[in-house]
Amino acid sequence: MSDEAFDIIGDVHGQAGKLLGLLKILGYRQMDGVWSHPEQRAIFVGDLIDRGPRQLETIDIVRPMVEAGRAHCVLGNHEFNAIAWATPHPEEPGEYLRSRKKASNRAQHEAFLTEVEDTPLHDELIAWFKSLPLWLDLGAIRVVHACWNDGYMSRRKPHLGQNNTLTEELVVLASRKGHWVYEAVEALRKGLEVELPDGVFFHDKDGHERRAARVKWWAPDFSSLRNSALAPRSVLAGMPDIPLPADPRLAPYEGPPVFFGHYWRSGSPEVMAEKFACVDYSAGKDGPLVAYRWEGESELRDAHFVSSDSN
Ligand SMILES: [Mn+2]
Image (cartoon, rainbow, N blue to C red; front, side):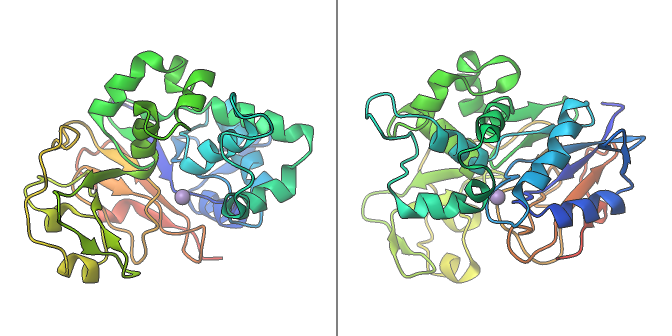
């Protein structure tokens, strides 16, 4: 058991106003220019950037906290995309690991680019993103952006930099569809997707036929597709009631509580299960920024969530 206490803070997505509001509610104060708390340390689950109106201000709050040892921050899919956007493609001259030719790639990254493109700060921030760990295992708790998966993590561990960071080589491989590193990074940042048996499909909320389902990796068992698929209720109702195909990646989780972000939840914050709390309540859209105040408990409780105002 750790004698430390942590506030695990959800995806900020450039909403510096919500972040400042939440830090104040949590009792943080500026000390020598760094937001600090006498007893707590903060942990950010990633996705600091994109979407919101105050990108640099968000980083200017979080980065000094991390550098002063007042906070940890793990890498989110938006930071990963920012790295890939900024990294030249090794085999295609003029291209980048995340293609700049695709309008949707730029649109998703526009708020950040507007504030940093063509400035030296851009390179500096990309270097900082590369210093963020993919996951944190603090003994008494674990933190990852989207998905804790022991199999993927142990396979990647030997290839990672110190402190579970991406290496230059991994950034390239993680952008190569079909490579196992790509799949591992996708899973950790976005969640686990399972291929359905031949001929089995369902319709997603837009009516598209889907032959793979995203699963709740925190599910207590994976005996039924309907019980472990991550989908709106209306979609679940139309899913075939079949057992999930056997998949070595799907194993019931064993370990200390896991905190994560990523899932754009809404409504009143509540734990997913005894050991699992998602702290993303859509601050990037119109939701509040949410934190979970962890004070040593091994069974997580709804009453420990703290929310900012929604603006
Ligand atoms: Mn996010």
